[in-house]
Amino acid sequence: MQFNDRLKELRKEKQLSQIQLAKELQVSQRSISSWETGFRQPDFDTLKALAKYFGVTTDYLLGVTD
Image (cartoon, rainbow, N blue to C red; front, side, top):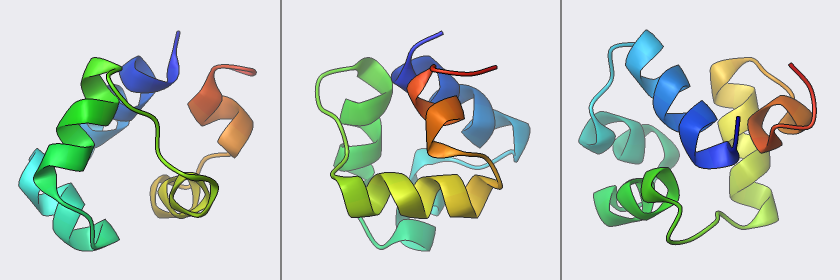
């Protein structure tokens, strides 16, 4: 599973909209959308923030581990 799939899955598990997640991370909804479609990738600091927010490792988010 790739990053974009993992992010979307985690967001939906928490029953969050893209807008809600964007507010939590202080990014735009457009950023969340582009990450989930695979158009763009978050920067390193944002990747760490995503991992912390969802309680997972960056390796998990990146699809390195299950």
